[in-house]
Structures are given as structure tokens and as C-alpha cells.
Length: 524
Image 1: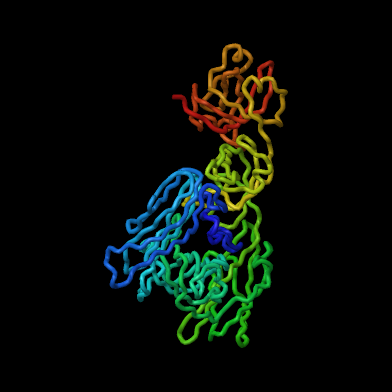
Image 2 (image 1 turned 90 degrees about the vertical axis):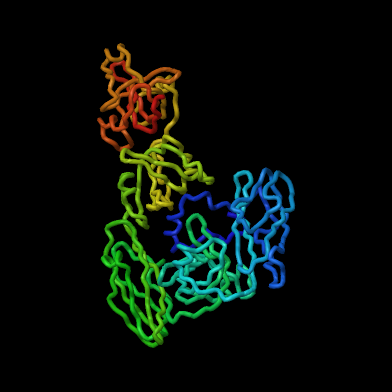
């Protein structure tokens, strides 16, 4: 969100599931800020000595440059900012806080001309023993800005420069967003030598970032190296072919045993057929069944023990699958996951919140879904009204379903927008669709004499009228791929506004438009 952010969304392939869950939040991928700049985005305030009076204040000044009106948001009561808002130009901003005996932090939003800069204000009190909390206590009952100490196992590592990773214990997990090195500096995570499976104790402030609970810029208190680690899988990119088969995992194992845990939802296709332990090296043989559905993935856990303590390591195993061609309703009913789906439908709207301009809504006769940031969309020049084919995965953002990690494969029909008069002058063709809009009106007697009908309850036969003229609509499908005779399901009637894509025909001198529903507006 700011120029020195810790690559929050640049993560390895094995974290794809996370991107599916956060697909369409508020344009998280801004990398530069042209409208607002600050001399420093991490601000430290003194906490005071024991002899200091309780009302003693400590302050720090930064320089702010803005191209328009700006304002700080989410300012806590313990922090004073002067000024808290202002206009274009350069401005000194003073941050003040009174003496504290407890460390605290604030994560402020600085807004200017639609851009958002994050400013982290910290006030670190003298070192005190912080009681150990569980991941669940931090995630469910924690207070933003308060410092917590948590001990758990490293589940996975998302970024090895800043140190973004997942810590889990027996109660749950918490996301570590930034890890300080032994000297308290950022961007030196590798110097700590932390690996997946290690048991680590950390301290840091809690933050709720759009529903994701994080501990930010943590200090590492202790590291207990794991006695087990996955060295290699003999399948490329940890992915099994669709046809299935055997493969092997090689592990370094300094413990006294080895147990392999496969999640319940993968036990119907993935099995352990052998375990061989030779000194400090273990080999596990797996078998995967053929996959006749979409792509699938699971996380396998390896467990060893020593002196009554349990150590774990994990690896992700994927299996290739077929691309599932389906309707929008079937796609929406599918589970979030790695399976690939192919949808064909009409672009009915663009998703304006996506500053990259790659997101849109696609609809067929069964429903509508958001396609979030489809590669190839901009290059194809696709627009509202076009009939397109897209492929991607079933994702969700805050329980709202969407297609993610998608690609626009084909523009089946590039649809031009026409007035009614322009449409009437077009040559007849069932291979070219046009976007037309107007008011649903009754066909006049002269059209009825040529075989026209007035029907808004079943097939959708009527005139569509705009300021340039009228054309007879000979049937409207309620969506791409739909059957005839379902127009009544749209609950439209005389006087309502209607937009369709349609091809032009002529029958016994009557100019006709055969349409597919795109959008509508009820008459006032």
C-alpha cells in the first residue's frame, strides 16, 4: 500500500490460496504514490522514564508533501497529530504522546486524492516480561496496537526479505508481517535462519488488516530448530500428473519416529504406501489416484518426536486436473480451490474498484459473477456487451464469490453499440451482435399485421424504442446460453428500460432483433 511495504502481495506460488481469499480488496497493489509523500513512514516516540510525570509528552516531527487535501485517519486517543489534516504543499507534522508504561502502536491511514499511505507510530516502553499468549487469544480477543508474545511453529514463509510468515500453535495461527533482525532492523530476515517447522517465540504489536490479524515487525525472542525438514519431492513443482502414480518425499529427520498426516479431504486420492528410515534420512512413498476432476491440492504434515516433544514439517502436494466447463451458477456453487473453470458469457459491467482495469462481471442465463483481474482482458480490448470465454479458479473475498487467477481466453463476439436507427440499417447477419438499449413498448398494428406479437410474459416479443426509432424484438434469452421462453423470469414489463445484445434479421419485410439480456431498469 506504500512504497516501502514489505511486498505484502508478492508471495510464492504455494500461497495462491491466500490471494484467492483477498482477491478484490481496495486495490492493494499500488506501488508508488504520486500524490502524497512523507519523510518517514515508521515513527518512534519515547515512552518516558519512571521519574517522569505522568503527563509528560514526547514528540517527533516529519515532513509531508501533498498534491491536494490530505488527512490522517484511524488516530487513537493516546496520540496527538498537529495538524491532522491540510492542503497541497509541504508541511511539518508533529506527533505527540504522553508517557506510557506499556508499549503501543498505531497504524494510521494518510489519504490524499484517492491514494493511501500507511504510517506506523510506535511508542516502546521499557522492557517488561510479557505473558505468553496463544494465537487464538491474539486473533480473537487481542487489541490492535498492543504488544503480545506468542510461541508456535513456523507453518510457512511468504517473504524472506521482510520476514512475512505464518506462526501456528495448538489453538490456531497468526500472520507475522515483518520480522526484525537481531539489531532491530528490517529486511534482514534470512540472517535469523528461521525455517518451516522451527518453534519460534516472538513479540510484536497486533494489527487487524482488512480482517487479517497480524503481528507487525516482531522481535524474535527464541528459536528452537526443528528436528525434521522436507528436503525434496521427486515431482516437478510438487505437482502430480492427472494420471496419478507414485512419488517420494525425502526428509532430514533427527527425531525418534516419523508419522505422516494427510488431511481428511485428501484421503480419497492420496495415500502413503511406504516409509523408510535410514539414520537421519527418511523417505516416504506416496501414491496418488488419477484425477478426473479439476486441479486439487493438499498440505501433508510430517511429525517426529524427541524427549517427549513433537516437531513438524509440512509440504504442499498438488495434482493436475481437467478444466471444468460449466455455467456461472455451477461455478458459484463450487468450493474455493485450485480447480480450473471455464465460463462463457456476456460482460455486463466493469468492476470500477480495480485500478488496474482488469476486472469485470460476466453473466450467462444462470447468474453473474465477478472476474477479478483477468490477464489478457485489457490487451483484448474487451468491453461491456462482448461475449467472452474466461478461465480461472473459484475464489472469494469476504464470502463474496469471484473468479481469480483468471485469463480471458477468447472474445467470441466483439459487440458494437448502436442506436436503434443504426441497427435497422445494418445488413442481416446471425454472426454479428450489437448492443442496443431502449424502452419496452408495444409493437404497432402495422408490425402486428406482418406477424409481430406483444409478449412480455414468456418469449419477449415487443418493440424496443429509443430517441432514434423502434425495432421489433423477436425473443430475448434471459442470458447467454439460455433457452427460449424464459423472458418472463426477468419480471420486465411495458415502459421498463432494457439493454440487449442482438443480431439483425428481416422476416417478410419486418426488421427484427433477436436478443440476449444484458441489463434493465424498472420504469419509475
